[in-house]
Length: 455
Ligand code: F6P
Image (cartoon, rainbow, N blue to C red; front, top):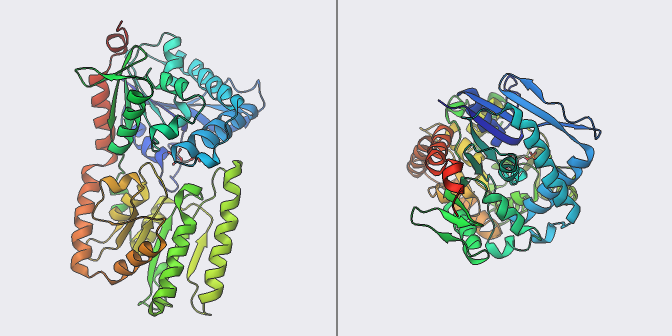
């Protein structure tokens, strides 16, 4: 069996207890359970000139970034250009030519560090938008191994993508992969439309796309979780409300402008205003760990939320009831499972999201005999496969408030039916099935020599 080389921006210490969800946790599970090497950034920022030593510990190999690289590659191109554009926020994108140069330079440098560790029969799986140029840089170094890419965030409509000044360079880099995996069929349609309409790509008889004289496969592989991690969740005694009639609505989102947190708070406030009978009967617990604080677009969101929560709590709260509990920290995974289990409703209402694994974790943590209700944004990738959730348009505050009311009123029979169907999907399309499907497809799509030496 060939070794799997996983490449991602973030790499976790396999020995340390995982914090709340996310892509790195899924990758850690994959690396733990097979012959693998995991390569990426170690999370450290060092002065330029001191970044070329690879730290190797068992299956993990990492390297630091220099401060200049961190600013141009991570803060700059990845999170001030690709992240906002891919989430349909062109207004927040900061197009600066030096960001792209740094982005490619870092990818090039990292491939140089990885190459000496590669073996001829390795299968390479690159993850996420930070590393789009990775395969092209490996190919330039003569690496012929099969290389797959998975984009964890959405792919935008093709005209939005074309606003990126370097969109053609990015497309050329994507074409160097044997397989591009996306979260949803809608993302696949967006990327294919772009390749066909903007770049005159064409589909060849075996289904691959011919682009820049390369052949590449594009398909959707919705990512899953390991539901067994949440199956043992318990109703936490410290979370049981003083009055047992009080219901908890939970939200767990990084403090990111894509997560629709102000909309969520407004919808919750609207529920309480429109249906005063729910006052003192329901609380919203929002866990929102701060993220990417060095990126400019993230600084305003915390103030906006604090002021919204403050105004709702101040206007409606009582001495023994605070409507919105707001926590700026991540939670250990086990604790998170107990919080999900102790919450009658989970609101996953991003304005745009690649998949959103919180939706799946919440379902996995429920008591099947008395499960809670998932409210899910139509703009989360998860909505494509979790249609038994209450699907909402998060921009529509009225509709979301009504969904909250339906969830609060939903009888046990309907809750069980919806949860049963959702849980089945979460188990069927779990993280192991996701990686297996992708890697089998990559085996069929590769090898590089066959697919790329097409005249
Ligand atoms: O796919 C989105 C992503 O890059 C994930 O890897 C991760 O869940 C999240 O964003 C974390 O972002 P960052 O690495 O910038 O903290």
